[in-house]
Image (cartoon, rainbow, N blue to C red):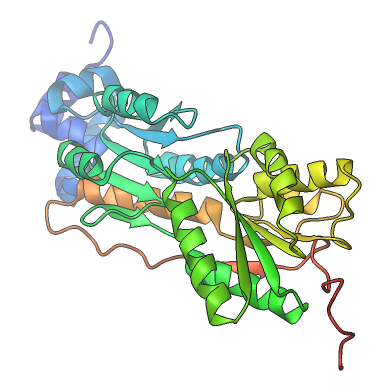
Length: 336
């Protein structure tokens, strides 16, 4: 046989259609096992190498999945992406990644462009409106991470449970007047965590002092420092770790001792949380596992002709007690 082996050569040798050959390499679970084995044997005999561009023309499938994140500079997201990409490779997909830079308009534009190049999408902490995400689900298989929309598949975390652990921790240390530094109002997880903090602090009989909403970045945390000082609190709960580290940095520059003057608790347990000085008390969430789970769920949605699989349960969170939280300065000694 002269020239490169094509998908049609394999199809003739296996006595199937070119679309069935393509499906064998892109979606092997959708091909009858005996037929699949016959096609793979023919491909091996002919030394065939799949051409994804040609397969896409025949089947309409690309073999690609899209990943959308709001900010790759935030250490929260690379771990999630690692989980998605690792599982995607195991399942035979290539991953295309875009960063929206925390811009809702940019997110909508990038998602629209990316959806034309992929077979399915994973959106991390999406900012788009619920109705837009529902409409997107009708165009492409879609899984959300850290965002819930009725009718759209999602992998979520027990944010309420993590906040409850923070509140109990600070109450046990004698803190009674506690500030909360929120992320942007456009963030679903920020709204959930802030609402949970309000509910849990009230339930435990503690005073919540809202500090305000800030950018979910190191500089966003630094910009909250003056309002924290004016709030006259002994402890602060912060939307995420990057902001918490920025807040600690700025408080220290103001001559405030963390944790002796003010305790600070973050959220996410990014890698830098344990490397800071002092190490950050925070709430751990399984980011890489969430990414892998979302990819497995997306694969099921893309390959199933029956009803969609049941979504996974909310993933557990766990308080990690480190060096930025201690007993409140005004609290009585333990045992009194």
